[in-house]
Length: 83
Image (cartoon, rainbow, N blue to C red):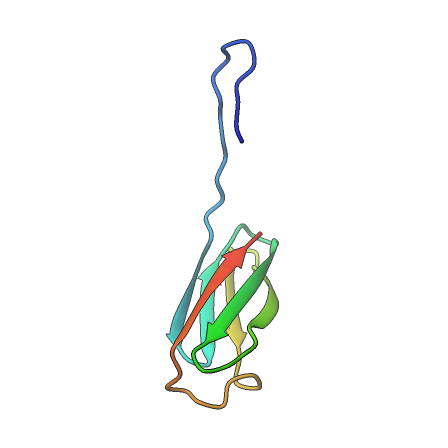
């Protein structure tokens, strides 16, 4: 919940945060430089989610290779990226 005190303007800084399944098993994304984010990926037909911590480089980019966790490159997956 957000609120203002004394009618002062409320300013929020929202970091740029995104991840894309370029081609399984590779996930690429952006986050604030140097930040560690949590990637959670649910693969259709798999009972457990894949959880990975990712660290953005000095430009804010990251790449994750999930080949050890994914055996089917044609799998359907959805996920989230959180700080």
